[in-house]
Image (tube, rainbow, N blue to C red; front, side):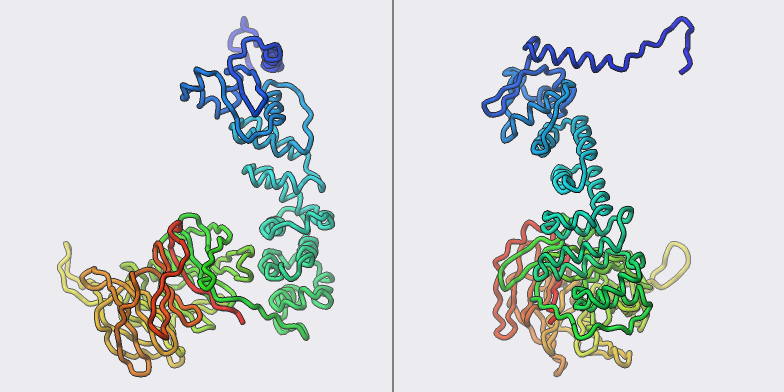
Length: 561
Protein backbone atom coordinates (compact mmCIF):
# COMPACT_ATOMS: atom_id res chain seq x y z
CA UNK A 1 0.00 0.00 0.00
CA UNK A 2 1.47 3.38 -1.00
CA UNK A 3 2.15 5.95 1.71
CA UNK A 4 0.38 9.32 1.44
CA UNK A 5 3.11 11.05 3.46
CA UNK A 6 6.76 9.94 3.64
CA UNK A 7 6.87 11.05 7.26
CA UNK A 8 4.03 8.66 8.22
CA UNK A 9 4.75 5.07 9.25
CA UNK A 10 2.09 2.32 9.10
CA UNK A 11 1.68 0.66 12.48
CA UNK A 12 0.32 -2.86 11.99
CA UNK A 13 0.43 -5.53 14.64
CA UNK A 14 -1.72 -8.49 13.67
CA UNK A 15 -1.83 -9.96 17.15
CA UNK A 16 -2.55 -6.64 18.87
CA UNK A 17 -6.33 -7.16 19.20
CA UNK A 18 -5.83 -10.75 20.24
CA UNK A 19 -3.40 -9.66 22.96
CA UNK A 20 -6.00 -7.21 24.28
CA UNK A 21 -8.54 -10.02 24.58
CA UNK A 22 -5.95 -12.14 26.36
CA UNK A 23 -5.54 -9.35 28.88
CA UNK A 24 -9.33 -9.12 29.26
CA UNK A 25 -9.30 -12.86 29.96
CA UNK A 26 -6.64 -12.40 32.65
CA UNK A 27 -8.77 -9.70 34.26
CA UNK A 28 -11.80 -11.99 34.12
CA UNK A 29 -9.92 -14.86 35.72
CA UNK A 30 -8.82 -12.53 38.53
CA UNK A 31 -12.29 -10.98 38.89
CA UNK A 32 -11.00 -7.48 38.09
CA UNK A 33 -13.42 -4.91 36.57
CA UNK A 34 -16.08 -7.57 35.96
CA UNK A 35 -19.42 -5.77 35.85
CA UNK A 36 -21.90 -8.49 34.86
CA UNK A 37 -22.86 -11.98 36.01
CA UNK A 38 -24.33 -14.82 33.94
CA UNK A 39 -26.11 -17.47 36.00
CA UNK A 40 -26.76 -20.96 34.64
CA UNK A 41 -28.35 -23.20 37.22
CA UNK A 42 -26.04 -23.32 40.24
CA UNK A 43 -23.08 -21.91 38.31
CA UNK A 44 -22.31 -18.21 37.80
CA UNK A 45 -19.82 -16.56 35.45
CA UNK A 46 -18.35 -13.08 35.92
CA UNK A 47 -17.77 -11.23 32.67
CA UNK A 48 -17.24 -7.74 31.24
CA UNK A 49 -20.26 -6.09 29.63
CA UNK A 50 -18.16 -4.57 26.87
CA UNK A 51 -16.80 -8.00 25.85
CA UNK A 52 -20.24 -9.54 26.16
CA UNK A 53 -21.88 -6.90 23.93
CA UNK A 54 -19.06 -7.10 21.39
CA UNK A 55 -19.69 -10.84 20.93
CA UNK A 56 -23.42 -11.29 21.53
CA UNK A 57 -26.18 -9.41 19.72
CA UNK A 58 -28.61 -10.83 22.28
CA UNK A 59 -26.85 -9.21 25.25
CA UNK A 60 -26.11 -6.06 23.27
CA UNK A 61 -29.83 -5.40 22.84
CA UNK A 62 -30.72 -6.68 26.31
CA UNK A 63 -28.32 -4.38 28.13
CA UNK A 64 -29.53 -1.38 26.14
CA UNK A 65 -33.26 -1.93 26.63
CA UNK A 66 -33.89 -3.87 29.85
CA UNK A 67 -33.50 -1.51 32.82
CA UNK A 68 -33.97 -4.29 35.36
CA UNK A 69 -31.07 -6.28 33.92
CA UNK A 70 -28.89 -3.18 33.67
CA UNK A 71 -29.43 -2.35 37.36
CA UNK A 72 -29.08 -5.91 38.70
CA UNK A 73 -26.07 -6.59 36.42
CA UNK A 74 -27.15 -10.22 36.43
CA UNK A 75 -28.96 -12.47 33.99
CA UNK A 76 -30.08 -16.09 34.32
CA UNK A 77 -29.99 -18.46 31.35
CA UNK A 78 -32.42 -21.35 31.50
CA UNK A 79 -32.15 -24.86 29.99
CA UNK A 80 -28.55 -24.41 28.80
CA UNK A 81 -25.61 -26.64 29.66
CA UNK A 82 -23.27 -24.78 32.11
CA UNK A 83 -20.21 -26.49 30.60
CA UNK A 84 -21.15 -25.29 27.11
CA UNK A 85 -21.79 -21.75 28.40
CA UNK A 86 -18.35 -21.79 30.08
CA UNK A 87 -16.82 -23.02 26.82
CA UNK A 88 -18.49 -20.20 24.83
CA UNK A 89 -17.30 -17.58 27.33
CA UNK A 90 -13.72 -18.88 27.13
CA UNK A 91 -13.82 -18.76 23.31
CA UNK A 92 -15.36 -15.28 23.49
CA UNK A 93 -12.30 -14.14 25.46
CA UNK A 94 -9.91 -15.73 22.97
CA UNK A 95 -8.93 -18.67 25.18
CA UNK A 96 -8.06 -21.95 23.48
CA UNK A 97 -10.22 -24.89 24.52
CA UNK A 98 -10.67 -28.51 23.52
CA UNK A 99 -14.29 -29.56 22.88
CA UNK A 100 -15.54 -33.10 23.22
CA UNK A 101 -17.86 -34.29 20.45
CA UNK A 102 -20.62 -34.70 23.02
CA UNK A 103 -20.55 -30.91 23.56
CA UNK A 104 -20.94 -29.89 19.91
CA UNK A 105 -24.71 -29.71 20.17
CA UNK A 106 -24.70 -27.61 23.33
CA UNK A 107 -21.96 -25.32 22.01
CA UNK A 108 -23.93 -24.49 18.86
CA UNK A 109 -27.13 -24.11 20.90
CA UNK A 110 -25.53 -21.50 23.20
CA UNK A 111 -23.95 -19.58 20.28
CA UNK A 112 -27.24 -19.61 18.33
CA UNK A 113 -29.45 -18.66 21.28
CA UNK A 114 -27.21 -15.79 22.41
CA UNK A 115 -26.74 -14.66 18.79
CA UNK A 116 -22.96 -14.94 18.91
CA UNK A 117 -22.65 -14.67 15.14
CA UNK A 118 -18.86 -14.78 14.84
CA UNK A 119 -18.62 -17.60 17.35
CA UNK A 120 -21.31 -19.53 15.48
CA UNK A 121 -19.34 -19.09 12.24
CA UNK A 122 -16.17 -20.24 13.99
CA UNK A 123 -17.90 -23.32 15.44
CA UNK A 124 -19.52 -24.10 12.06
CA UNK A 125 -16.15 -23.96 10.33
CA UNK A 126 -14.66 -26.14 13.04
CA UNK A 127 -17.47 -28.68 12.66
CA UNK A 128 -17.07 -28.63 8.89
CA UNK A 129 -13.40 -29.56 9.29
CA UNK A 130 -14.51 -32.36 11.63
CA UNK A 131 -16.92 -33.97 9.14
CA UNK A 132 -16.07 -37.60 8.33
CA UNK A 133 -18.03 -40.81 7.77
CA UNK A 134 -18.41 -41.24 11.53
CA UNK A 135 -19.43 -37.68 12.42
CA UNK A 136 -21.44 -36.54 9.40
CA UNK A 137 -24.77 -37.76 10.79
CA UNK A 138 -24.44 -35.83 14.06
CA UNK A 139 -23.09 -32.67 12.44
CA UNK A 140 -25.76 -32.74 9.74
CA UNK A 141 -28.45 -32.95 12.44
CA UNK A 142 -26.92 -29.95 14.25
CA UNK A 143 -26.81 -27.97 10.99
CA UNK A 144 -30.49 -28.65 10.27
CA UNK A 145 -31.78 -27.83 13.75
CA UNK A 146 -29.80 -24.60 14.11
CA UNK A 147 -30.15 -23.49 10.46
CA UNK A 148 -26.43 -23.58 9.65
CA UNK A 149 -27.06 -23.67 5.89
CA UNK A 150 -23.45 -23.77 4.66
CA UNK A 151 -22.57 -26.51 7.13
CA UNK A 152 -25.65 -28.47 6.11
CA UNK A 153 -24.79 -28.11 2.42
CA UNK A 154 -21.27 -29.39 3.07
CA UNK A 155 -22.64 -32.41 4.98
CA UNK A 156 -24.96 -33.24 2.07
CA UNK A 157 -22.12 -33.05 -0.45
CA UNK A 158 -19.89 -35.17 1.78
CA UNK A 159 -22.65 -37.75 2.25
CA UNK A 160 -23.29 -37.90 -1.50
CA UNK A 161 -19.59 -38.44 -2.19
CA UNK A 162 -19.14 -41.13 0.48
CA UNK A 163 -22.59 -42.72 0.40
CA UNK A 164 -21.13 -46.07 -0.65
CA UNK A 165 -19.22 -46.26 2.63
CA UNK A 166 -21.88 -44.64 4.80
CA UNK A 167 -24.61 -47.10 3.81
CA UNK A 168 -22.97 -49.76 5.99
CA UNK A 169 -23.37 -47.60 9.10
CA UNK A 170 -26.35 -48.53 11.28
CA UNK A 171 -27.35 -44.85 11.40
CA UNK A 172 -27.85 -44.93 7.63
CA UNK A 173 -30.75 -47.32 8.19
CA UNK A 174 -32.74 -44.78 10.20
CA UNK A 175 -32.23 -41.74 7.96
CA UNK A 176 -35.49 -40.03 7.03
CA UNK A 177 -36.74 -39.91 3.46
CA UNK A 178 -35.98 -36.18 3.13
CA UNK A 179 -32.33 -36.82 4.11
CA UNK A 180 -32.00 -39.55 1.49
CA UNK A 181 -33.61 -37.19 -1.01
CA UNK A 182 -31.02 -34.48 -0.26
CA UNK A 183 -28.18 -36.94 -0.86
CA UNK A 184 -29.67 -38.20 -4.13
CA UNK A 185 -30.38 -34.70 -5.44
CA UNK A 186 -26.79 -33.51 -4.90
CA UNK A 187 -25.50 -33.05 -8.44
CA UNK A 188 -21.89 -32.18 -7.63
CA UNK A 189 -20.76 -35.20 -5.63
CA UNK A 190 -20.96 -38.98 -5.87
CA UNK A 191 -21.96 -41.30 -8.70
CA UNK A 192 -25.55 -42.00 -9.67
CA UNK A 193 -24.88 -45.74 -9.58
CA UNK A 194 -23.58 -45.47 -6.01
CA UNK A 195 -26.56 -43.36 -4.98
CA UNK A 196 -29.05 -45.82 -6.47
CA UNK A 197 -27.32 -48.76 -4.78
CA UNK A 198 -27.49 -46.91 -1.46
CA UNK A 199 -31.16 -46.04 -2.01
CA UNK A 200 -31.95 -49.69 -2.60
CA UNK A 201 -30.06 -50.66 0.58
CA UNK A 202 -31.94 -47.98 2.57
CA UNK A 203 -35.33 -49.21 1.35
CA UNK A 204 -34.45 -52.86 2.05
CA UNK A 205 -33.78 -52.09 5.72
CA UNK A 206 -37.56 -51.59 6.03
CA UNK A 207 -39.05 -52.71 2.74
CA UNK A 208 -42.64 -52.75 3.96
CA UNK A 209 -42.49 -49.25 5.41
CA UNK A 210 -40.33 -47.64 2.70
CA UNK A 211 -41.43 -49.20 -0.57
CA UNK A 212 -43.84 -46.33 -1.23
CA UNK A 213 -40.94 -43.86 -0.92
CA UNK A 214 -38.84 -45.70 -3.47
CA UNK A 215 -40.27 -44.35 -6.72
CA UNK A 216 -40.48 -40.76 -5.46
CA UNK A 217 -36.80 -40.82 -4.49
CA UNK A 218 -35.89 -42.84 -7.56
CA UNK A 219 -37.04 -40.11 -9.99
CA UNK A 220 -34.48 -37.69 -8.50
CA UNK A 221 -31.64 -39.72 -9.99
CA UNK A 222 -30.12 -38.98 -13.38
CA UNK A 223 -30.43 -42.43 -14.93
CA UNK A 224 -28.38 -41.43 -17.97
CA UNK A 225 -25.31 -41.48 -15.67
CA UNK A 226 -25.86 -45.05 -14.45
CA UNK A 227 -23.51 -47.61 -15.94
CA UNK A 228 -25.29 -49.78 -18.49
CA UNK A 229 -23.92 -52.98 -16.99
CA UNK A 230 -25.35 -51.99 -13.58
CA UNK A 231 -28.65 -51.00 -15.17
CA UNK A 232 -28.98 -54.37 -16.89
CA UNK A 233 -28.20 -56.10 -13.61
CA UNK A 234 -30.99 -54.13 -11.92
CA UNK A 235 -33.48 -55.04 -14.66
CA UNK A 236 -32.63 -58.72 -14.43
CA UNK A 237 -31.90 -59.41 -10.77
CA UNK A 238 -32.90 -56.59 -8.41
CA UNK A 239 -36.35 -57.47 -6.95
CA UNK A 240 -37.04 -53.90 -5.82
CA UNK A 241 -36.72 -52.68 -9.44
CA UNK A 242 -38.48 -55.65 -11.00
CA UNK A 243 -41.42 -55.33 -8.60
CA UNK A 244 -41.84 -51.61 -9.33
CA UNK A 245 -43.19 -51.25 -12.86
CA UNK A 246 -42.54 -47.50 -13.10
CA UNK A 247 -38.91 -47.79 -11.98
CA UNK A 248 -38.38 -50.75 -14.29
CA UNK A 249 -39.69 -48.85 -17.30
CA UNK A 250 -37.67 -45.72 -16.50
CA UNK A 251 -34.41 -47.69 -16.42
CA UNK A 252 -35.44 -49.55 -19.55
CA UNK A 253 -36.13 -46.35 -21.46
CA UNK A 254 -32.96 -44.64 -20.22
CA UNK A 255 -30.57 -47.50 -20.88
CA UNK A 256 -32.23 -49.46 -23.68
CA UNK A 257 -34.20 -46.72 -25.44
CA UNK A 258 -37.33 -48.86 -25.43
CA UNK A 259 -40.74 -48.55 -23.81
CA UNK A 260 -41.87 -52.05 -24.80
CA UNK A 261 -40.27 -53.70 -21.79
CA UNK A 262 -42.22 -55.21 -18.91
CA UNK A 263 -41.03 -57.23 -15.94
CA UNK A 264 -42.40 -60.68 -15.47
CA UNK A 265 -44.22 -61.82 -13.42
CA UNK A 266 -44.38 -58.85 -11.03
CA UNK A 267 -46.91 -56.00 -11.25
CA UNK A 268 -47.21 -53.16 -8.75
CA UNK A 269 -50.48 -52.74 -6.87
CA UNK A 270 -50.62 -49.74 -4.56
CA UNK A 271 -53.19 -49.84 -1.75
CA UNK A 272 -54.25 -46.44 -0.52
CA UNK A 273 -57.33 -44.85 1.02
CA UNK A 274 -59.12 -41.81 -0.34
CA UNK A 275 -58.18 -38.57 1.35
CA UNK A 276 -58.22 -34.79 1.02
CA UNK A 277 -55.27 -32.61 0.07
CA UNK A 278 -55.34 -29.02 1.33
CA UNK A 279 -52.94 -26.39 0.01
CA UNK A 280 -51.90 -24.02 2.79
CA UNK A 281 -51.06 -20.62 1.31
CA UNK A 282 -49.40 -19.33 4.49
CA UNK A 283 -46.86 -22.10 5.13
CA UNK A 284 -46.40 -23.38 1.58
CA UNK A 285 -47.22 -26.89 2.78
CA UNK A 286 -49.69 -29.52 1.70
CA UNK A 287 -51.88 -31.12 4.36
CA UNK A 288 -53.46 -34.55 4.11
CA UNK A 289 -56.82 -35.22 5.73
CA UNK A 290 -58.50 -38.57 6.27
CA UNK A 291 -62.11 -37.54 6.96
CA UNK A 292 -63.12 -41.01 8.13
CA UNK A 293 -60.50 -40.89 10.87
CA UNK A 294 -60.81 -37.16 11.62
CA UNK A 295 -57.05 -36.93 11.23
CA UNK A 296 -54.87 -34.25 9.59
CA UNK A 297 -51.23 -34.75 8.64
CA UNK A 298 -48.73 -32.12 7.53
CA UNK A 299 -46.87 -33.06 4.38
CA UNK A 300 -43.60 -31.78 3.00
CA UNK A 301 -42.91 -28.10 2.35
CA UNK A 302 -42.98 -27.00 -1.29
CA UNK A 303 -41.33 -24.03 -2.95
CA UNK A 304 -44.37 -23.33 -5.13
CA UNK A 305 -46.31 -20.20 -4.16
CA UNK A 306 -49.86 -21.40 -3.56
CA UNK A 307 -51.38 -17.95 -3.42
CA UNK A 308 -55.14 -18.00 -2.95
CA UNK A 309 -57.06 -17.54 -6.20
CA UNK A 310 -54.08 -18.02 -8.53
CA UNK A 311 -54.17 -21.75 -9.24
CA UNK A 312 -56.21 -24.93 -9.41
CA UNK A 313 -55.16 -28.52 -8.79
CA UNK A 314 -56.38 -31.97 -9.75
CA UNK A 315 -55.51 -35.61 -9.14
CA UNK A 316 -54.92 -37.94 -12.09
CA UNK A 317 -53.70 -41.49 -11.65
CA UNK A 318 -50.60 -41.30 -9.42
CA UNK A 319 -49.94 -37.55 -9.61
CA UNK A 320 -51.23 -34.13 -8.62
CA UNK A 321 -51.24 -31.42 -11.29
CA UNK A 322 -51.21 -27.72 -10.36
CA UNK A 323 -52.20 -25.21 -13.04
CA UNK A 324 -51.07 -21.66 -12.37
CA UNK A 325 -52.39 -18.28 -13.44
CA UNK A 326 -49.37 -17.73 -15.72
CA UNK A 327 -50.26 -20.84 -17.82
CA UNK A 328 -47.54 -22.98 -16.22
CA UNK A 329 -48.27 -26.47 -14.93
CA UNK A 330 -46.52 -28.57 -12.29
CA UNK A 331 -46.69 -32.31 -11.67
CA UNK A 332 -46.08 -34.02 -8.34
CA UNK A 333 -45.89 -37.79 -8.11
CA UNK A 334 -47.96 -39.21 -5.28
CA UNK A 335 -46.32 -42.36 -4.08
CA UNK A 336 -46.77 -42.08 -0.34
CA UNK A 337 -48.65 -39.68 1.94
CA UNK A 338 -45.50 -39.33 4.06
CA UNK A 339 -43.03 -39.34 1.20
CA UNK A 340 -40.69 -36.87 -0.39
CA UNK A 341 -42.66 -34.84 -2.92
CA UNK A 342 -40.90 -33.88 -6.11
CA UNK A 343 -42.42 -31.20 -8.36
CA UNK A 344 -41.68 -31.22 -12.07
CA UNK A 345 -42.39 -28.41 -14.52
CA UNK A 346 -44.53 -29.57 -17.43
CA UNK A 347 -45.38 -27.86 -20.71
CA UNK A 348 -47.39 -24.63 -20.32
CA UNK A 349 -50.89 -24.15 -21.70
CA UNK A 350 -51.37 -22.65 -25.15
CA UNK A 351 -53.95 -20.04 -24.10
CA UNK A 352 -54.45 -17.67 -21.18
CA UNK A 353 -57.29 -18.94 -18.99
CA UNK A 354 -56.70 -16.47 -16.17
CA UNK A 355 -56.59 -17.13 -12.43
CA UNK A 356 -57.90 -20.46 -11.14
CA UNK A 357 -58.32 -22.04 -14.58
CA UNK A 358 -61.18 -24.61 -14.52
CA UNK A 359 -59.59 -28.05 -14.85
CA UNK A 360 -61.24 -31.48 -15.07
CA UNK A 361 -60.17 -35.00 -16.04
CA UNK A 362 -61.73 -38.02 -17.72
CA UNK A 363 -59.23 -40.36 -16.06
CA UNK A 364 -56.75 -40.23 -18.94
CA UNK A 365 -56.17 -36.57 -19.83
CA UNK A 366 -56.67 -33.12 -18.32
CA UNK A 367 -59.00 -30.49 -19.79
CA UNK A 368 -59.10 -26.73 -19.16
CA UNK A 369 -62.43 -25.29 -20.28
CA UNK A 370 -62.69 -21.54 -20.92
CA UNK A 371 -61.67 -18.91 -18.32
CA UNK A 372 -61.04 -19.05 -14.60
CA UNK A 373 -62.33 -16.88 -11.77
CA UNK A 374 -61.05 -13.61 -13.18
CA UNK A 375 -61.89 -11.15 -15.91
CA UNK A 376 -59.97 -13.16 -18.49
CA UNK A 377 -62.15 -13.80 -21.54
CA UNK A 378 -61.25 -17.28 -22.75
CA UNK A 379 -63.19 -19.12 -25.44
CA UNK A 380 -61.02 -22.28 -25.74
CA UNK A 381 -61.01 -25.81 -24.38
CA UNK A 382 -57.54 -27.33 -24.13
CA UNK A 383 -56.55 -30.96 -23.65
CA UNK A 384 -53.36 -32.05 -21.86
CA UNK A 385 -51.84 -35.50 -22.40
CA UNK A 386 -49.57 -36.25 -19.39
CA UNK A 387 -47.77 -39.08 -21.14
CA UNK A 388 -46.76 -36.95 -24.13
CA UNK A 389 -46.59 -33.67 -22.15
CA UNK A 390 -48.56 -31.88 -24.89
CA UNK A 391 -51.45 -29.38 -25.00
CA UNK A 392 -53.97 -29.33 -27.85
CA UNK A 393 -56.84 -26.90 -28.46
CA UNK A 394 -59.90 -29.09 -29.11
CA UNK A 395 -62.80 -26.61 -29.13
CA UNK A 396 -63.76 -22.95 -29.26
CA UNK A 397 -67.02 -21.30 -28.21
CA UNK A 398 -68.41 -18.08 -26.79
CA UNK A 399 -66.29 -16.73 -23.91
CA UNK A 400 -67.14 -17.90 -20.41
CA UNK A 401 -65.40 -17.51 -17.03
CA UNK A 402 -65.98 -18.02 -13.28
CA UNK A 403 -68.06 -21.13 -14.06
CA UNK A 404 -67.81 -24.61 -12.59
CA UNK A 405 -66.87 -27.75 -14.50
CA UNK A 406 -67.30 -31.50 -14.04
CA UNK A 407 -66.79 -34.54 -16.26
CA UNK A 408 -69.45 -37.27 -16.37
CA UNK A 409 -69.54 -40.11 -18.90
CA UNK A 410 -66.87 -38.48 -21.11
CA UNK A 411 -68.72 -35.17 -21.27
CA UNK A 412 -67.52 -31.86 -19.85
CA UNK A 413 -70.35 -29.89 -18.19
CA UNK A 414 -69.80 -26.12 -17.97
CA UNK A 415 -72.20 -24.63 -15.44
CA UNK A 416 -73.16 -20.99 -15.00
CA UNK A 417 -70.42 -18.41 -14.65
CA UNK A 418 -70.10 -15.21 -16.64
CA UNK A 419 -70.61 -15.15 -20.39
CA UNK A 420 -69.72 -12.60 -23.03
CA UNK A 421 -72.34 -10.28 -24.46
CA UNK A 422 -71.46 -7.57 -27.03
CA UNK A 423 -72.22 -4.10 -25.66
CA UNK A 424 -72.01 -0.99 -27.85
CA UNK A 425 -70.05 1.85 -26.34
CA UNK A 426 -68.14 4.90 -27.52
CA UNK A 427 -64.50 5.04 -26.37
CA UNK A 428 -62.38 8.16 -26.25
CA UNK A 429 -61.18 7.61 -29.80
CA UNK A 430 -63.22 5.87 -32.49
CA UNK A 431 -66.02 3.28 -32.17
CA UNK A 432 -65.79 -0.40 -31.29
CA UNK A 433 -67.56 -3.29 -29.57
CA UNK A 434 -66.36 -4.43 -26.16
CA UNK A 435 -67.00 -7.91 -24.87
CA UNK A 436 -68.83 -7.56 -21.55
CA UNK A 437 -69.09 -10.52 -19.15
CA UNK A 438 -72.28 -11.00 -17.11
CA UNK A 439 -73.69 -13.83 -14.89
CA UNK A 440 -75.59 -16.52 -16.78
CA UNK A 441 -77.95 -19.44 -16.18
CA UNK A 442 -76.51 -21.22 -19.20
CA UNK A 443 -75.23 -24.80 -18.97
CA UNK A 444 -73.57 -26.65 -21.84
CA UNK A 445 -71.94 -30.04 -22.28
CA UNK A 446 -69.03 -30.92 -24.53
CA UNK A 447 -68.79 -34.51 -25.77
CA UNK A 448 -65.16 -35.67 -25.73
CA UNK A 449 -65.92 -38.43 -28.24
CA UNK A 450 -67.31 -36.30 -31.07
CA UNK A 451 -66.16 -32.81 -29.94
CA UNK A 452 -69.70 -31.38 -30.05
CA UNK A 453 -71.44 -28.91 -27.73
CA UNK A 454 -75.02 -29.33 -26.47
CA UNK A 455 -77.19 -26.72 -24.71
CA UNK A 456 -78.82 -28.07 -21.56
CA UNK A 457 -81.58 -26.97 -19.17
CA UNK A 458 -80.97 -23.52 -17.70
CA UNK A 459 -80.01 -23.22 -14.05
CA UNK A 460 -82.77 -21.99 -11.71
CA UNK A 461 -80.66 -18.86 -11.13
CA UNK A 462 -77.59 -17.14 -12.58
CA UNK A 463 -74.60 -18.28 -10.49
CA UNK A 464 -70.87 -17.76 -10.81
CA UNK A 465 -67.79 -18.83 -8.78
CA UNK A 466 -69.58 -21.91 -7.44
CA UNK A 467 -68.15 -25.35 -6.71
CA UNK A 468 -69.44 -28.40 -8.59
CA UNK A 469 -68.98 -32.16 -8.16
CA UNK A 470 -70.62 -35.25 -9.62
CA UNK A 471 -71.95 -38.27 -7.77
CA UNK A 472 -73.28 -40.98 -10.07
CA UNK A 473 -75.52 -39.36 -12.67
CA UNK A 474 -76.12 -36.21 -10.60
CA UNK A 475 -74.19 -32.94 -10.56
CA UNK A 476 -74.16 -30.88 -7.35
CA UNK A 477 -73.56 -27.12 -7.67
CA UNK A 478 -72.63 -25.65 -4.29
CA UNK A 479 -72.45 -22.03 -3.20
CA UNK A 480 -71.22 -19.30 -5.50
CA UNK A 481 -72.50 -15.77 -6.09
CA UNK A 482 -75.66 -14.48 -7.74
CA UNK A 483 -76.13 -11.61 -10.12
CA UNK A 484 -76.62 -9.23 -7.19
CA UNK A 485 -73.29 -10.31 -5.61
CA UNK A 486 -75.20 -12.02 -2.83
CA UNK A 487 -74.06 -15.50 -1.85
CA UNK A 488 -75.99 -18.57 -2.97
CA UNK A 489 -77.18 -20.37 0.18
CA UNK A 490 -78.52 -23.49 -1.54
CA UNK A 491 -77.20 -26.52 -3.35
CA UNK A 492 -78.51 -27.13 -6.86
CA UNK A 493 -78.74 -30.72 -8.16
CA UNK A 494 -78.84 -31.57 -11.86
CA UNK A 495 -80.07 -35.00 -13.02
CA UNK A 496 -78.22 -35.93 -16.19
CA UNK A 497 -80.82 -38.51 -17.23
CA UNK A 498 -83.85 -36.22 -16.94
CA UNK A 499 -82.12 -32.90 -17.74
CA UNK A 500 -83.86 -31.37 -14.71
CA UNK A 501 -82.74 -29.25 -11.75
CA UNK A 502 -83.74 -29.52 -8.08
CA UNK A 503 -82.66 -27.62 -4.97
CA UNK A 504 -81.25 -28.65 -1.57
CA UNK A 505 -80.53 -26.52 1.49
CA UNK A 506 -78.43 -28.93 3.52
CA UNK A 507 -75.09 -27.22 4.07
CA UNK A 508 -74.77 -25.09 7.18
CA UNK A 509 -72.55 -22.59 5.39
CA UNK A 510 -71.88 -22.20 1.71
CA UNK A 511 -68.62 -21.47 -0.05
CA UNK A 512 -65.16 -22.92 -0.43
CA UNK A 513 -63.92 -25.96 -2.34
CA UNK A 514 -65.89 -29.17 -2.90
CA UNK A 515 -64.81 -32.71 -3.65
CA UNK A 516 -66.11 -36.27 -3.38
CA UNK A 517 -64.72 -39.08 -1.23
CA UNK A 518 -66.41 -42.50 -1.16
CA UNK A 519 -69.63 -41.05 -2.56
CA UNK A 520 -69.93 -38.24 0.02
CA UNK A 521 -69.49 -34.55 -0.77
CA UNK A 522 -66.99 -32.58 1.30
CA UNK A 523 -66.99 -28.78 1.34
CA UNK A 524 -63.83 -27.16 2.70
CA UNK A 525 -64.10 -23.59 3.90
CA UNK A 526 -61.81 -21.22 5.77
CA UNK A 527 -62.38 -22.74 9.19
CA UNK A 528 -64.33 -25.97 8.80
CA UNK A 529 -65.08 -29.04 6.70
CA UNK A 530 -68.67 -30.16 6.05
CA UNK A 531 -69.83 -33.49 4.68
CA UNK A 532 -73.06 -34.24 2.81
CA UNK A 533 -74.23 -37.84 2.67
CA UNK A 534 -76.01 -37.90 -0.69
CA UNK A 535 -77.92 -41.10 0.11
CA UNK A 536 -79.94 -39.45 2.88
CA UNK A 537 -79.09 -35.74 2.28
CA UNK A 538 -77.78 -35.37 5.83
CA UNK A 539 -75.05 -32.81 6.48
CA UNK A 540 -72.51 -32.88 9.30
CA UNK A 541 -69.41 -30.91 10.30
CA UNK A 542 -66.17 -32.92 10.36
CA UNK A 543 -64.36 -32.70 13.70
CA UNK A 544 -61.02 -31.53 12.27
CA UNK A 545 -59.60 -28.12 13.14
CA UNK A 546 -58.39 -26.30 10.01
CA UNK A 547 -58.69 -22.77 11.39
CA UNK A 548 -54.89 -22.44 11.54
CA UNK A 549 -54.57 -22.98 7.78
CA UNK A 550 -54.84 -20.39 5.04
CA UNK A 551 -56.68 -22.67 2.64
CA UNK A 552 -55.84 -21.69 -0.91
CA UNK A 553 -57.19 -24.87 -2.52
CA UNK A 554 -58.52 -28.31 -1.62
CA UNK A 555 -58.96 -31.49 -3.64
CA UNK A 556 -59.58 -35.20 -3.18
CA UNK A 557 -57.18 -38.01 -4.00
CA UNK A 558 -58.85 -41.27 -4.94
CA UNK A 559 -57.37 -44.63 -4.05
CA UNK A 560 -55.19 -46.29 -6.62
CA UNK A 561 -56.64 -49.78 -6.10
